Structure formats: structure tokens, C-alpha cells
Image (cartoon, rainbow, N blue to C red; front, side, top):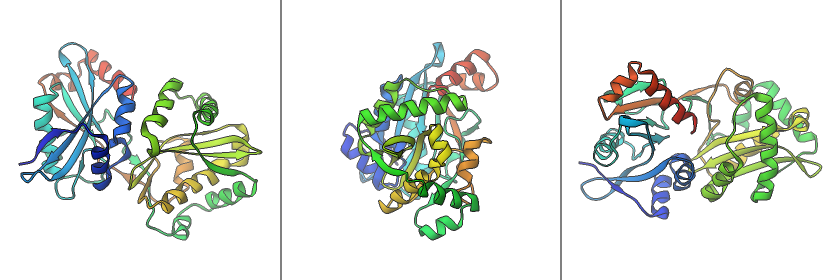
Length: 327
């Protein structure tokens, strides 16, 4: 029997996530980010009868209106030792029923297939898009480039010839400048942003797991890509470019630099974080000859109210969507 127990030590928690090949959104720092912005993180280790850790789940909880009580959400988790996935899911349900009761548990595993989901309900109410593009960084640079479109390879070479300097960004002052670019990108593409404090929290609380590369022309940043990284996974969080960056195609050389640096660091997978039917996705798709589909979002009902919500109670659905949009 696998049981769950709370972990209160950041170093131990992150060691487990790294050792089990976990996703960076399961790292302690990401929980701290969400904890500073209306969620509450719970770090649960799952151990077997010999007290050996076989899994972990960073459960983010959020209060729901009235009798719905609570949403339990596990981004890109739980993490489990190979072969223990189904047992860890069962232990997660038992733990949440006892310690985090509410309306539902929602999980979005970082896997293309996962055992133990047969008792769960597939949900279309997703936070992280399951259709994505993941590069296998065990491949050589030549193999990675051969899978790109001809235009992508050309634009990488073109932007490299434009005298662009690419380096990693560390300071809050540099990040502040990149946020100006992000705001321009958001206005141009028509998507909403968090306040600046949120992004500073991401960088501060993730620490070394926050990796930002900026492309500079004549000493001024023109584009950036921002990753969250664990020992095995690089996950794109944010990115953008200004008008100069667009004219120089700076995002091509920049993304290729990020990919090769992650490969150099021994990271195994580079996840471009979701594909939609838009221009950004078309840009991403130029870097590979395939797509990836993760298992998606699965819910486990913790209350009869879940059925009421899933069958169409308008107020409840609206409340949950509003909560999830604040991810």
C-alpha cells in the first residue's frame, strides 16, 4: 500500500522531483509562485511499505464558491517511479479525500500515456494544452536541424548573420526591460498578462530553474524566451519580441540557442508548451517534423457536486473557468 505524507523541506522535495524525472511545474519554486497568487501549494510524497519514495504530487488548491469548497489541481503531475503511476494516482485520491476534500482533483500528467486513469473523468476544461511539441535532446544537433522546415533553418542562419548577441538574463533590472517587450507582444497578439510582480515572482522563486535567454542588437534586447527547467525537462513559459526583433527574425536564432544550451546542460526534453492554430504555433512547428499529444486533463470527483457542475450548472462552471483562467 502506497501512502502520502506531507513534505516540508524544499531541498528534499526538489531532489525527489529531479530524481524521478519530474516536470519543472512540480518543483517547489513553482508552488511558491502560485502560493503568492491565490493558490495554496501542498507537497505530497508517496512512499511504499518500506518508506521508499515512489512518487510525488504538488497539489495546488483554490477555494471555490459556497458548497463547492475546493479545487485540487496537479500541474504536469503527479510524478511517479516507472511502473508506480497507477498506485500513485490511487494514493493521491486517498490523500485528497482525507486532507484536501472538495469538489474535484484535476491532474495534467507530463506523459503521453498513463496507467490508472480508468476511474477518472476526461475533462475538456484544461489549463495546460496537451497538444504540444517536445524535442528529444538526445538527438544530435544535425538530427534536430534535419527535422526542421527548410524555412526555419534559413531563418536561423539569417538571424545569426544579423549580428545578434544572445545571452542569459539574471537580474531584475534586465527582466524589467524584457517585460516591456512582452507587453508589446501581448498588445500585438491580443492576449492578457499578469501584473509585473507575478513575473518577478516566477524568476525569484524558481531560482536556478528560471532560465531566460535574450537576443540583443547593438546592446539592446529585441527578443526573449523564458524557460522553467528541471533535471530532465525544459518548458517554455513566455517569450516575445519587439518590432526590431521581428524584422531580424531574432526569435529563430534565439530558440535554437535555447535548445542547444538545454542539450548541452544534459536536459532530455524541450517542451514548447502547447500548440494552437495560430501564428506562434506555426513558428514552433517549423522546428520539428512531429507533434506530441499528452494524456490531457483528467478529473476525479470528490463530491456529488462534481456531477452537478459537469452536467451544466452555469454558475459553477463559470466559477471554475474563472479560477483556471488565473493560472
